[in-house]
Amino acid sequence: MTLLLSLTAFGQRYEKVPFGDFEQWTVRYVTESQIIGGQERTLYVVGPTDTIRGSVAHDYENTIWSSSNAFAKVAGVVKTSINVTPDKGPKGRCAKLTTQFASCRVAGLVNIKVLAAGSIYWGKMLEPITGVSDPYAFMDWGIPFTKRPNALVLNYKSVIPNTGKLVKGTSFRTTEFDGYDPAEVFFILQYRWEDEKGNIHAKRVGTAVAHVDKSSNGWVNNFRIPLVYGDARKSTDYKPYMALISGAKTMYALNSKGKKKAIQEEAWAEDDSPVTHAIMMITSGSQGAFVGALGNVLWVDEIRLEY
Image 1: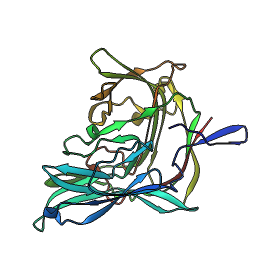
Image 2 (image 1 turned 45 degrees about the horizontal axis):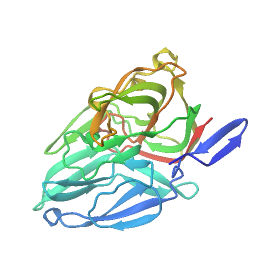
Image 3 (image 1 turned 180 degrees about the horizontal axis):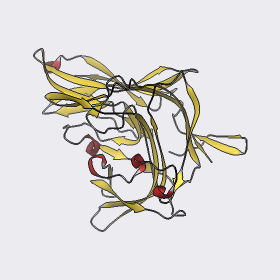
Image 4 (image 1 turned 135 degrees about the vertical axis):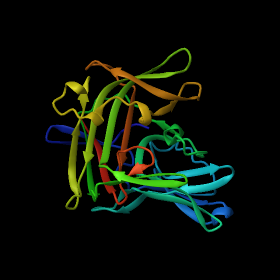
């Protein structure tokens, strides 16, 4: 899917991201397994207006967006998690991303309680999810992309309580500890290639990452995050969260054979390196899987690229 619609203002050109105005959503009605209540849940996909009924995997072929809204089938049990929803914006609709628990009740008892930040990202969820040990492994991160924008621009509103407490929620237990969890807007450009064994390698070409660390006073319009090309560590605006992707935040993609492989982001590219892929993620928390600050909420709207 290409980025087609553009606007020009003050000598700059703005290209709207497909479905980045959040006026269109695909609505999925999924019935969970009887053993956990058998309720019908509503999952939302940022994409063409459509309605899908049934506990079936979604292919995400008609949109560049996926989200942390999850359709899982573990040991034959169908379960959902919903923390991305459409909401009323200043004009029309926007996307609401919330950090919260997803609980699974069996026979009236809570036996699984997983914490997740609300996130939208470019790529595909590889449904159904069959486990929680490594949620990033069920995502095909990024889309083919060859352009070199100057900046990412969007509108946002935030509630970031900053209580100083974080929660880790994985399966059967939760723990609380001191910490800090800003919302994050993450947009990177990569040059990717595949070796003879099908492994995916990448160099970082462009970096635009920002943290939203406090509650806003209403909507913040035209929030601009410039792209830093080449080695972002040389920029005076460099922050540790702009580093190459590794460790617990390793991302995955499908190779040319349809096999899931870790994206090995190995080095910073030269300033004029070609671009083959882009990854965008906007999330209500930046701590990674299963860790976050309960109560964080981020609303986003009107996502566009500046050239």
